[in-house]
Amino acid sequence: MAIAIAREYNLRMRPLNAQSVELLIRESGGVTGEAKPFAEHVDHIMQRAIENERPSPSTLDDWNNDALRVKEFFNIIPACDIELEHVNAYINRFHSDSSANVQNRKVSFLKKLFSYAVDESLMFDNPASRKKMRRTEEKKRQRLSLDNFKAIRRAAEPWLRTAMDLALQTTHARLEVSRIRYSISEPKDGVCGCVWLAQPENGIYGTLYIHRQKVQKKEASHVAIPIGEELKRIIDDSRDSVASPFIVHRIPERQVKRSKEVSHPTQVAPDYLSRSFSAVRDKLDLCDKMSMDERPTFHEIRALAAHLFDQQGIDPQARMAHSDAKSTKIYTQDHIDWIVVPHGEVKIY
Picture 1 (cartoon, rainbow, N blue to C red):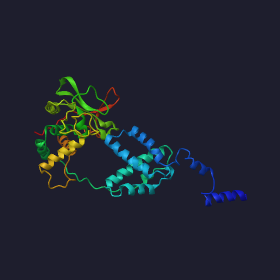
Picture 2 (picture 1 turned 90 degrees about the horizontal axis):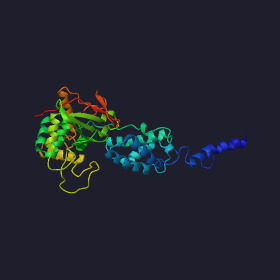
Picture 3 (picture 1 turned 90 degrees about the vertical axis):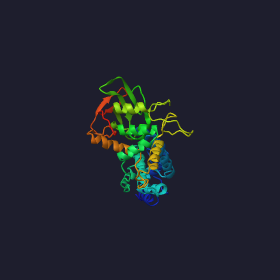
């Protein structure tokens, strides 16, 4: 009895000097690796997250940068020992001066990694889920008026005018607009382009298939838009002497490093599209009384288009790839459900 009491005393009062089964298991890395530094699990967890969630290239770049910071911070901290205090320390170390939006995104990334760790029994719970998110400011960006849209369009180069027209008719953003191809043989995952009919049927010339990347894991991300007179006019007007598979195209003025978002020398990068729109806007002094944060960007064409469709009595939700929209599905050979939206056009002239 005395020996048993002495052993128990040593385990409780002198844990660093006392040997136990639990301590031996912990020193070996734990049952499932939970006692190993969390940094050793990050690469595997990232691989799972990428396979499951299929982030866009820009999002993946952010993830990879964040993963490097996570591995640096949790280099000696066992996965099973991570608590809320570590989450706070991580944010304070790398993002103490960042905005509320940025800090919230970084906490969400930790929450994502830790959720996979919990799933693999590396952690008992997710401490990042207990972190209180910071309050974010209301959106400052002002809406783009139809008059300002027309003014910018009149002053824009032909390729930018084409991009604006496509955004207005499709309600889609810069990434999707920059990826629309003149012709594709069939709808495919991750591809935006036109499938043409051999002969027009009831004023419809074909279908424009758009895969919206921002919601790519949701059913609503695959949208099929009928090509009517207005869309066909925009596509026809965009054709010129430049041999390009993309409707929005231009020949670069100088050789620069190609963006990860483009696959052809004539394809316009989404960032360049946004910057060009904003440059014309500012050149015309349309928003000179607004701060830079308030001035409408190319993305605001999406909201303007939704408003104009709504005014015509056409529900824009499905066209915009909103997952809560009422819509019709078609099933293609690649086992993808495409949301078919009714034919509709915005006529502003």
